[in-house]
Image 1: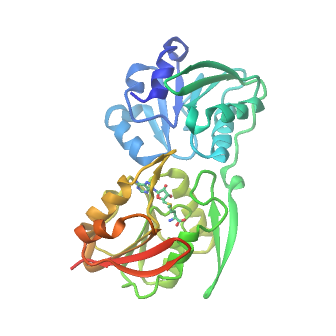
Image 2: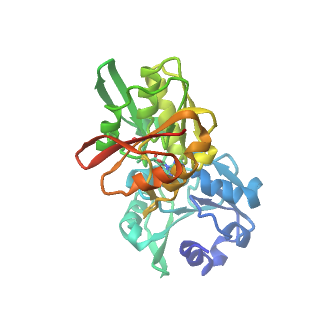
Length: 332
Ligand SMILES: C[S@@+](CC[C@H](N)C(=O)[O-])C[C@H]1O[C@@H](n2cnc3c(N)ncnc32)[C@H](O)[C@@H]1O
């Protein structure tokens, strides 16, 4: 059981009625709270929960229409995303109770101050390195408009400007990542066909790929519903078309790819996590066509080449700058 769920279950009587668990972990909490529903924006956790509780779950960037009498938000990493999620929940709970639970090292103490926009927050419990906070929603906000919270920036590229639209909580919100910038400068010579942007975030790599290789079928994949929504906004802002998929890891991607392009993840929520990248290297060959290529950017200190060579073949370093490297490897 996730420690945040354990903290909730110490006061299970508060959570016995129709409750929405927003951003819940993939554990047995829904099993312990039979009147609760879950809302997830993380495709992997959603899939694990759906195996047991499909009819009590929703996935996406906003709570679905099913009614709830109270809600618990599991604190996400981003302050702006927390703001949006709290507003989305508080808008549905005028006069009712809203809870926030999170790890101390995830910044729960500071985040609890964000509850003050709706009433007077109070700390209910502190245990398992987590805290549980409560507020009665005295001032209910209007439901937030997510596209209005997007940050937009323009990249001046050789073939014209590209507008990037990032939503709260999405990687490199409002600015281009240094690693991604290096990869953008090394997208030449890919075989046009079916191209994957793995871990697409706001969709900058996928959008550039579609513009560089207009005949290609571009697929973009991310585990996070807010990244998927951002990528769709970025494509639309530039009049581009690509398939955008919410899914957990390379196994959710299609086969017969000519190239996989990625600034691969090494975080999951507040924790460092190489699992998705290691799995990408291990499974890339089975998603690539013969001679298909994996091309990634990574921090120079990450020991990715031996992993890539173990599964795919010789790993070349195409470029190095500002602490990042571009690696390329092709399957036989
Ligand atoms: C380093 S960011 C790169 C984002 C974007 N491609 C860019 O360059 O700005 C990595 C992305 O991988 C996504 N991600 C993390 N774990 C994933 C998983 N298991 N499956 C798919 N995507 C994942 C994250 O949500 C994040 O958007």
